Length: 192
Image (cartoon, rainbow, N blue to C red; front, side, top):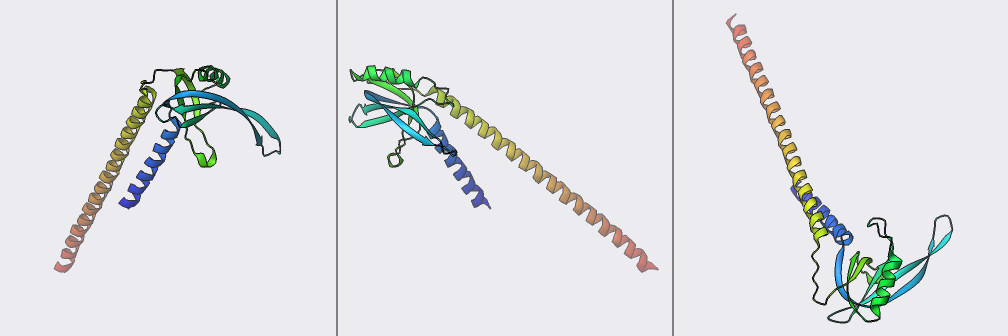
């Protein structure tokens, strides 16, 4: 049973870590190279086909000049509604190949053409190092909630164990009382 609980804990922790790694914003320092807009058709269940524009921010790594591409779409969760503005900003910065910080969330998975989504872009120096204060606050809050939940569950478990022990004691006391009463009654029967 303990192995099952440990496996369940490790599996749950791994899933939480993956979700947080995907969803929490990260910052990459890169060189702006260009922008691109692609038309994407989406089929709906009703049979309708809608077309939308998807913006892409093209960059390259500072040290290796290897390309990095970011999707640039509006997002309800992060309340991002300025994709076109970011696209225009990167387009002007790409003319001089300026060094920029790209705040994004998500993963780059080449096999399924999945790109991280850009949240913000700003000009930085090449030696810029980002301190993820937002991520630290979120992770601290999650750790505190996890610790408090662990303590609450442990306390609840202890209370259940205490109740079980007290019930066992009371049933043992009742059994002993019955046994004493039976002994007493059986002694009276033997005297007659």
